[in-house]
Length: 179
Image (cartoon, rainbow, N blue to C red; front, side):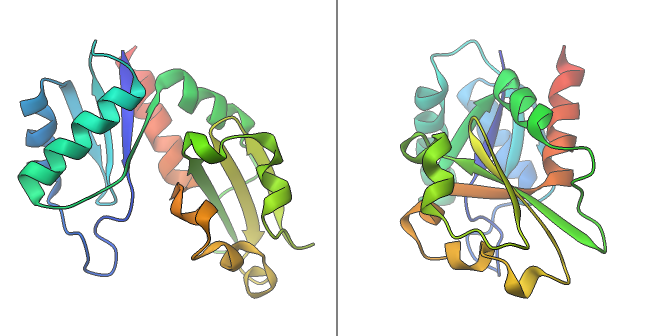
Protein backbone atom coordinates (compact mmCIF):
# COMPACT_ATOMS: atom_id res chain seq x y z
CA UNK A 1 0.00 0.00 0.00
CA UNK A 2 1.14 3.58 -0.71
CA UNK A 3 1.58 6.00 2.19
CA UNK A 4 2.94 9.43 2.93
CA UNK A 5 4.60 10.23 6.24
CA UNK A 6 4.25 13.86 7.30
CA UNK A 7 6.84 14.80 9.89
CA UNK A 8 5.91 17.66 12.21
CA UNK A 9 8.34 20.49 12.86
CA UNK A 10 11.53 19.41 11.10
CA UNK A 11 14.00 21.76 9.42
CA UNK A 12 12.09 24.79 10.73
CA UNK A 13 14.14 27.80 11.79
CA UNK A 14 17.30 25.71 12.05
CA UNK A 15 15.66 23.28 14.50
CA UNK A 16 15.21 19.51 14.25
CA UNK A 17 17.50 19.29 11.25
CA UNK A 18 17.25 16.20 9.09
CA UNK A 19 18.99 15.43 5.85
CA UNK A 20 16.50 13.90 3.41
CA UNK A 21 18.97 11.32 2.02
CA UNK A 22 19.61 10.03 5.54
CA UNK A 23 15.86 10.06 6.27
CA UNK A 24 15.28 8.06 3.08
CA UNK A 25 17.88 5.53 4.26
CA UNK A 26 16.09 5.30 7.63
CA UNK A 27 12.82 4.44 5.86
CA UNK A 28 14.56 1.86 3.69
CA UNK A 29 16.22 0.31 6.77
CA UNK A 30 12.75 -0.20 8.29
CA UNK A 31 11.88 -2.17 5.15
CA UNK A 32 9.80 0.38 3.26
CA UNK A 33 10.19 0.43 -0.53
CA UNK A 34 10.04 3.00 -3.31
CA UNK A 35 10.89 5.73 -0.79
CA UNK A 36 10.62 9.26 -2.21
CA UNK A 37 11.24 12.40 -0.18
CA UNK A 38 9.74 15.69 -1.30
CA UNK A 39 11.29 19.01 -0.28
CA UNK A 40 13.00 19.51 3.05
CA UNK A 41 9.94 19.74 5.31
CA UNK A 42 9.47 16.05 6.02
CA UNK A 43 7.27 14.54 3.32
CA UNK A 44 8.09 10.93 2.52
CA UNK A 45 6.10 8.77 0.13
CA UNK A 46 6.70 5.02 0.39
CA UNK A 47 5.18 1.59 0.02
CA UNK A 48 4.74 -1.10 2.62
CA UNK A 49 2.46 -4.02 3.31
CA UNK A 50 2.94 -3.54 7.04
CA UNK A 51 0.34 -3.09 9.76
CA UNK A 52 -1.75 0.08 9.79
CA UNK A 53 -1.17 3.83 9.82
CA UNK A 54 -0.69 4.13 13.60
CA UNK A 55 1.75 1.21 13.73
CA UNK A 56 3.69 2.66 10.79
CA UNK A 57 3.82 6.10 12.46
CA UNK A 58 5.16 4.53 15.69
CA UNK A 59 7.76 2.56 13.74
CA UNK A 60 8.93 5.72 11.95
CA UNK A 61 9.03 7.76 15.18
CA UNK A 62 11.17 5.05 16.82
CA UNK A 63 13.53 4.92 13.83
CA UNK A 64 13.91 8.73 13.79
CA UNK A 65 14.69 8.71 17.50
CA UNK A 66 17.30 6.00 16.90
CA UNK A 67 18.91 7.55 13.80
CA UNK A 68 18.52 11.29 14.51
CA UNK A 69 18.08 11.43 18.31
CA UNK A 70 14.92 13.52 17.82
CA UNK A 71 11.39 13.13 19.15
CA UNK A 72 9.33 13.93 16.05
CA UNK A 73 5.59 13.39 15.68
CA UNK A 74 4.72 11.56 12.48
CA UNK A 75 1.33 11.47 10.79
CA UNK A 76 0.78 8.76 8.20
CA UNK A 77 -1.85 9.01 5.46
CA UNK A 78 -2.57 6.51 2.72
CA UNK A 79 -3.27 7.30 -0.93
CA UNK A 80 -7.05 7.34 -0.44
CA UNK A 81 -6.72 9.83 2.46
CA UNK A 82 -4.68 12.20 0.30
CA UNK A 83 -7.03 11.72 -2.65
CA UNK A 84 -10.06 12.72 -0.52
CA UNK A 85 -8.28 15.82 0.80
CA UNK A 86 -7.10 16.75 -2.70
CA UNK A 87 -10.65 16.35 -4.06
CA UNK A 88 -11.99 18.74 -1.37
CA UNK A 89 -9.53 21.46 -2.41
CA UNK A 90 -11.13 23.94 -4.80
CA UNK A 91 -9.00 24.40 -7.93
CA UNK A 92 -9.07 28.15 -7.35
CA UNK A 93 -7.38 27.78 -3.95
CA UNK A 94 -3.68 28.18 -4.69
CA UNK A 95 -0.46 29.40 -3.16
CA UNK A 96 0.98 32.20 -5.22
CA UNK A 97 1.90 35.87 -4.80
CA UNK A 98 -1.71 36.83 -4.02
CA UNK A 99 -3.18 33.87 -2.15
CA UNK A 100 -2.13 31.44 0.55
CA UNK A 101 -3.75 28.06 0.98
CA UNK A 102 -2.68 25.67 3.73
CA UNK A 103 -3.69 22.10 4.42
CA UNK A 104 -3.64 21.40 8.14
CA UNK A 105 -3.41 17.64 8.53
CA UNK A 106 -5.08 16.53 11.75
CA UNK A 107 -4.20 13.78 14.18
CA UNK A 108 -7.20 11.57 15.00
CA UNK A 109 -7.92 13.41 18.26
CA UNK A 110 -9.07 16.48 16.33
CA UNK A 111 -10.22 14.91 13.07
CA UNK A 112 -13.93 15.72 13.01
CA UNK A 113 -16.05 18.31 11.16
CA UNK A 114 -16.91 20.22 14.35
CA UNK A 115 -13.26 21.21 14.65
CA UNK A 116 -14.21 24.30 12.64
CA UNK A 117 -16.32 25.47 15.59
CA UNK A 118 -13.26 25.33 17.85
CA UNK A 119 -11.02 27.60 15.78
CA UNK A 120 -11.20 31.31 15.10
CA UNK A 121 -12.30 31.94 11.55
CA UNK A 122 -12.54 35.55 10.45
CA UNK A 123 -14.62 37.00 7.60
CA UNK A 124 -11.51 37.14 5.35
CA UNK A 125 -10.91 33.40 5.72
CA UNK A 126 -12.17 30.58 3.50
CA UNK A 127 -12.04 27.44 5.62
CA UNK A 128 -13.30 23.93 4.92
CA UNK A 129 -13.10 20.61 6.70
CA UNK A 130 -12.07 17.55 4.71
CA UNK A 131 -11.72 14.19 6.43
CA UNK A 132 -8.19 14.32 7.86
CA UNK A 133 -7.57 18.04 7.39
CA UNK A 134 -8.64 21.65 7.69
CA UNK A 135 -8.23 23.56 4.42
CA UNK A 136 -7.48 27.26 4.96
CA UNK A 137 -7.41 29.92 2.25
CA UNK A 138 -6.78 33.66 2.60
CA UNK A 139 -5.26 36.40 0.46
CA UNK A 140 -1.92 37.78 1.58
CA UNK A 141 -3.50 41.26 1.83
CA UNK A 142 -6.03 39.89 4.33
CA UNK A 143 -3.57 37.64 6.17
CA UNK A 144 -3.05 40.12 9.05
CA UNK A 145 -6.83 40.02 9.66
CA UNK A 146 -7.02 36.21 9.38
CA UNK A 147 -7.77 33.88 12.27
CA UNK A 148 -4.98 31.55 11.16
CA UNK A 149 -2.42 33.19 13.45
CA UNK A 150 -4.67 32.48 16.47
CA UNK A 151 -4.03 28.75 16.04
CA UNK A 152 -0.37 28.90 17.03
CA UNK A 153 0.26 27.54 20.51
CA UNK A 154 -3.18 25.91 20.86
CA UNK A 155 -3.83 22.25 21.60
CA UNK A 156 -5.33 21.92 18.13
CA UNK A 157 -2.16 23.35 16.56
CA UNK A 158 -0.02 20.83 18.47
CA UNK A 159 -2.13 18.08 16.88
CA UNK A 160 -1.71 19.10 13.27
CA UNK A 161 1.04 19.39 10.72
CA UNK A 162 0.71 22.03 8.01
CA UNK A 163 1.66 21.93 4.33
CA UNK A 164 0.92 24.45 1.63
CA UNK A 165 -1.47 23.44 -1.11
CA UNK A 166 1.29 23.14 -3.72
CA UNK A 167 3.07 20.56 -1.58
CA UNK A 168 -0.13 18.58 -1.03
CA UNK A 169 -0.95 18.54 -4.72
CA UNK A 170 2.58 17.39 -5.54
CA UNK A 171 2.43 14.61 -2.92
CA UNK A 172 -0.86 13.44 -4.43
CA UNK A 173 0.76 13.41 -7.88
CA UNK A 174 3.75 11.41 -6.60
CA UNK A 175 1.44 8.90 -4.91
CA UNK A 176 -0.78 8.67 -7.99
CA UNK A 177 2.28 7.81 -10.08
CA UNK A 178 2.85 4.73 -7.90
CA UNK A 179 -0.39 3.21 -9.28
